Image (cartoon, rainbow, N blue to C red):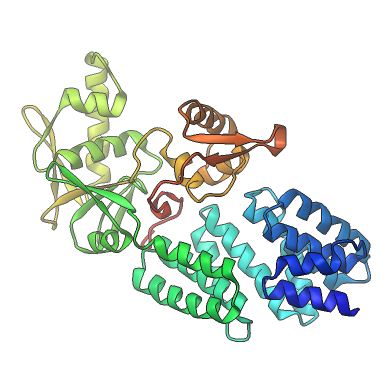
Amino acid sequence: MDSLITAAARALAAGDLIGVLKRVGLRDDAPALALRGIAMAQLGDYARAKALLQRATRAFGSREAVARARCVVAEAEIALVSRDLGWRPKALDAARATLAKHGDRVNAAHARHLEVRRLLLIGRLDEAEHAFAGLDPTPLPPALRAAHELVAVGIALRRLRIEAARAALARARRSARQAGIPALMAEVESASRLLRAPAARLIADGAERLLVLEEVEATLASGVLVVDACRHVVRRADAVVSLARRPVLFALARALGEAWPGDLSRETLLKRAFRARQADESHRARLRVEMGRLRAALRPLARVNATPRGFTLEPRRAVKVVVLAPPVDEPHGAVLAFLADGEAWSSSALALVLGTSPRTVQRSLERLAAAGRVRPYGRGRARRWISASVPGFTTTLLLPGPLPSD
């Protein structure tokens, strides 16, 4: 490797992107193309970066397996950052295996981190935690140790282990300072703001207030009966009844939870659960059936009692019922929550993480764009969507994924 390539690689490791381009910006050999691609990615020109890395992969040839694998890892990172979630995980896994086989443990660990971050993004929390458990950050350089701790923060936040998240943030901050890379330090500070941002709304006794993540954790551990509209479950401490696949039952449970300790009329329940403007006998019959199903589903945690006016919720072994709702509770709130990370998303990527059809997401985006809340750019397959203004709340609880006791 010649001196310019060596100097460019050192500049890249130090976060000096302009220094990289000064040294190899006019060269078209394989190492230069790879370095230019990584630098352009960090500057935000993902399309150009992807093209350069693909050229570098072809230029390295089949005999330079390690160099080709590094290019695949860099391309996977670009895909993750640009929210291209359709890239092939098997290609990244093969690249990681090649790097580990040839003794490049640093880049192999980086590939594993990318895999875990993708799993976190699409809500596969158990798989992400399992893949992350075998990683030892001790031999890694400071920049990669900081990235490792940021992944640990993401897992801890989604598991609502706030003390563990704070400890990982402190380690990430120390490693980022040792690395001396401003972008990495900014990412750590951005993650730390999640702990101070509103994460949910608590609805109880006819009033509501915003909670930060630490307060959410305390509420779930307090022993009260929680109707969790962020994850569509009803829980008390570690006992959980999931209604995620039973939206009518959850709508009824939430309505009763918001009305507690009072009851709720049958007419109101019909409007909340079935959106019935004028209820007839068929609606009332269906309400009786659904309330019977809700009574059976919630039997371990609460009773659903009939009253002369309607129904009421009576918790078992809990002194209070509260509702935990997303900070933004609206028809397209989940789409806004993912766009709140400041990245540009495609409609197909949003459909993947939300578990719905691309057409449903496209309709939501079109309505949000008409209201001036999101903005598109690009055309066709290259079209991406961004939030018109980044809201001041954390999206952690809106991301898919099971509760710790699921």
